[in-house]
Length: 275
Image (cartoon, rainbow, N blue to C red; front, side, top):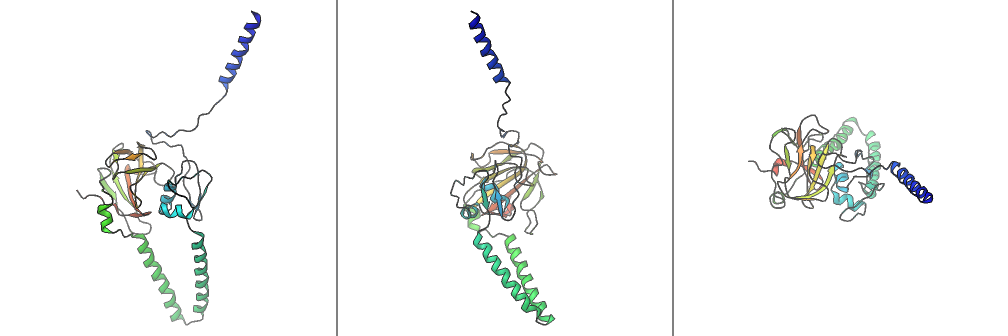
């Protein structure tokens, strides 16, 4: 009888010691509160980025203003574009880098020749490249989308009702979307049917962000939300509630809405219905 009691006492001590061990649960994404497990921000240096937990190829490409297909091709990543923590993602092809080095070398040689010319000729030669550079910047900032692609590829609706307090600008450092103000908690709805390719807060200046993929050409983004109601890889219908208006990473309580065509921001007013 004494032996049995000693065995029971030994088992009880083992059980209590096991319970006292500190087990920390893995971080969980709370979609209903808009809180995500990823506390880091995507920061791209020298056209490359080291993947961290919570990143997607779409969020990385979006942050770099690149088409996800182009980024995938550079890194030999095939659909569904799976990436892993620690992986290095390159945003520019090494061949293009070599071409830039050669162009730079040619410019240096040309500048040495120009120094030997008269002041008037030198001024003309310097003015022309500046003018061409300015035209190229203006062309890049304003992406042309064929009219037939606007009307037929995706059927759009307004993501939220409210006052537009900021509009799209074609300037290089201009606002690349619409800022639509309304009360905190106002429902944000999918502007078109699609798939959630990102739901989190890792992109600088966007707060709690949702990115929807509508087809191979179009993405839409919904930023500064207080709550997120959808998760990654979820299919959503047009008009479905996906988030609530908030002011995360912003000074105004408003929705930042963007449309990206092949990685480049375009004016949402060209796509949304006027009424």
